[in-house]
Length: 411
Image (cartoon, rainbow, N blue to C red; front, side, top):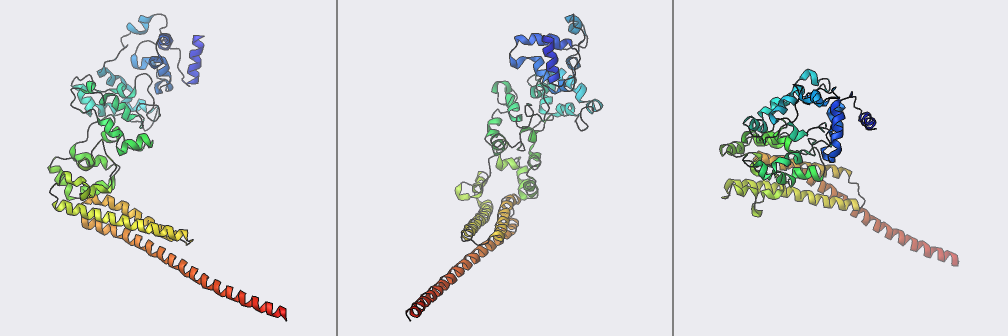
């Protein structure tokens, strides 16, 4: 009965595995384990079972020795039971660093994971003898390893922050590393974390998008903007050509993170520039000076354009309510909104002339919208006035004709 169930499980999982003494023995041992610790069940649901990679491919031993435990495991030189962390790199790398072997499963699969790992913060810590350093199984799991694109996988994009948090939020575990343990809480409340967890946008950056995967390491001061620029390319290019880039580097400050923070990035808003509303710039420029003049200029341009667009939108709504054709006006209004978005990006140039010049088309588009909507309202008033007088004339003619008809009837 038990062997029949095993065979059924194999068939259901579409795993073509010959009789394996490891499976036969460990499925019996699993009966006394809770669901989270059933080794065979986890293995059969994983990618290795799917690809017909058996227990002995990782642990060694003789999977054909059914009658003698020693022959299956302890008498075999290749057998490895519990692996030391250092041994995992060699064991996993035996396959995952072999391009010829891995091409059997995917033509585009990477085979440099171990090399990258050795350059990472984790790899360097492990090479120094730090047993706490994360290795393959700490992130990917042990027997139930799933493909990275599987939503159930611990390394699937949506799950990565929580996977990293298993170690990086534990003060006791991280003691001695010199690393903080509040990164996940900061990230969870950031614009990126809210996009990932609340909106379930897996395109939102997670830990690995900034730190890397197998070569995970914190970006240094010089390269922070390159990391952010992967997504925010226009902001990065403008900043790279600004005077502020060099100023921040000379002070040893991060570039993007100096204003936006790193893990706790909050959604930017226009009040960041409002000097009278505790502008973000004040943190470095308490004395005001040129920084205040620039911030005031930027805020003035953005606020004026916002008000212009709001006014245009209100007038367009009125024209639409009157039944006027507004399709062309909506195009002008959309152009103005796009310029407003670009203007907020353009402040990363820290050049008032550049920002002012590129904001001008937005004011022109908004004004064109207002003019068009006002013309539509004037036309409506003209039509309504014409209709009023036309109605009076018709009413007068009806009265006159009615009297004339009664006179003719009396005759």
